[in-house]
Image 1 (tube, helix red, strand yellow):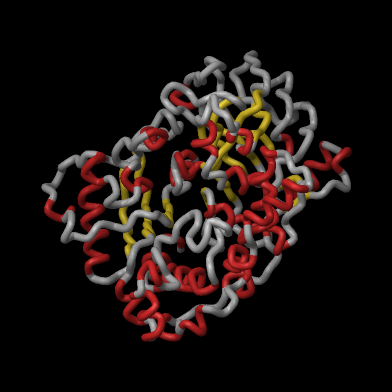
Image 2: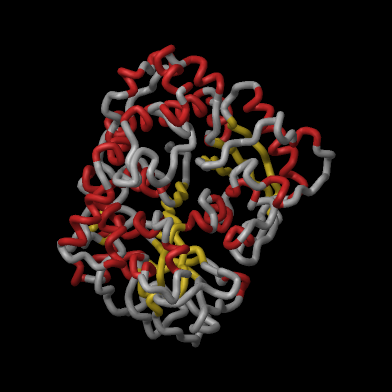
Length: 474
């Protein structure tokens, strides 16, 4: 990890990586020791997972949310407070007042320029973690409005140092149901200053005076926004008898404008970037990354060759959306072909590269191997994301799908439990439901054995491709 410059995370990925980045916990306690598939009997799998995985075993999001609401929590803060308690509290990272900063020295620099913050709480990443950490969310629409006519929502990226939307989408304003021609993006703002009214000098600079935010954008807020998967749907449920949009996270947002231009802060509904890009890849291409390892944990299994064989597609053929939908996760194919809704703006790789890419993944799966694939792509320009293009990126994909070699190594009792399918302990493995895997009364909860088996398969996928990883990040 000492050679990794950045981590870009979305939704549940932000839950895990926030703890990895900030927790003052040794890695063995946090992640566990190296395991052997042959040792993973049901008795072993039912043991308490390492600290990171245990958060969703021991906690119940519905119970936590109910408790906070009884205490008078605001609707638009309820999800963030629930996630904060569920994921961050076990690591003493759950302060609802602490600002984020990139390091202790960055914190001291902030206080030197803002003496009123002396003594205020800050959280900073643990030592020897990547220097850049991005938790990806989206700006949905001004609070109480529906989205734009084309469902336009814009990336909002939260980091310990800077947060915001780095570029103007398509280089032009965005219009919503009522609020027209809104400037969004244009640059990043120091995170401790996010969530306030716009400054007089809105085009930026190193020392801009501005009002203090009423409340800090905390680590819990960031991972709550990043994982508010319901928000995009709730935002469009207007008008209605039940104003579910009020459950969406909110933030006072203003853009970085061109010199001389001013736009007042707007109270925006925020949500999970997974409805736009659930990989975090595009945020890294915005920054000009040349090497990317992307872990794609989709609910869509890679289609079997007996159903659709992408290896029979003629070279140079451009597949259609209909030909790939539900046969590989949209997070893969929308990087090559325009997807539906907010996935329509994500094309960064040549379309004719998709069929051979899927063919290579299918060959790995058919051979029982993990779906781990190295490929170099030409990056195309993408005006919506502000990606210039015209360069190559070396990618290493880890796609979560069935791995027969891994399953064959498991002890007999574990394989027997897997074989029970929906009637056993591992229903839907390795594509657990995002909500209600075991009970809607514990919506994001998993059991110890579910956490431990999925973690072990991910570990197996990496270790079986150790040389690829070493080459990529050496």
